[in-house]
Length: 148
Figure 1 (tube, helix red, strand yellow):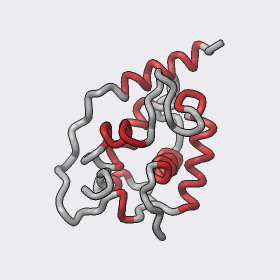
Figure 2: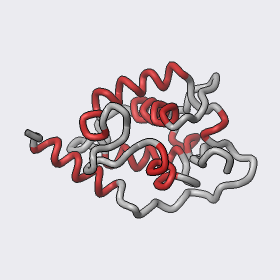
Figure 3: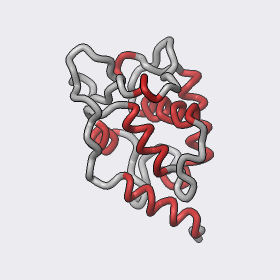
Figure 4: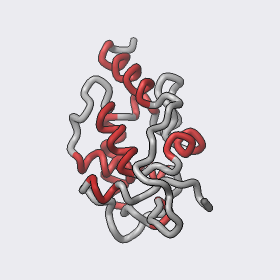
């Protein structure tokens, strides 16, 4: 049986992941940093995986495919929601709505590590530098589908 807390979390996530997309902070500029430029490390993605398993997998499932109430965080649904927006946008939206029933309850570093894990699962390559914890720097990294 689904707990009241989990049901509340799922409802809040659905509201946050509606088909309405936030406006990008800035338009995509040719030559700017994208998720395909190796913007996170493998170690950071591993930390994010631990956060995901603890805080997200119950609703979004182990494979990030979602469960009908919680949207998928991989593939076409991910790119439809976030393309041409920044990693800063994804983290700000996640922080303001997740985990369900306890938004903004994780550290900034945990939200950033979680973003690294989601990027890894969406086949964005890792690199030698971690995603920064500084929110201002995250606005400069744009989500695009490969090849855009």
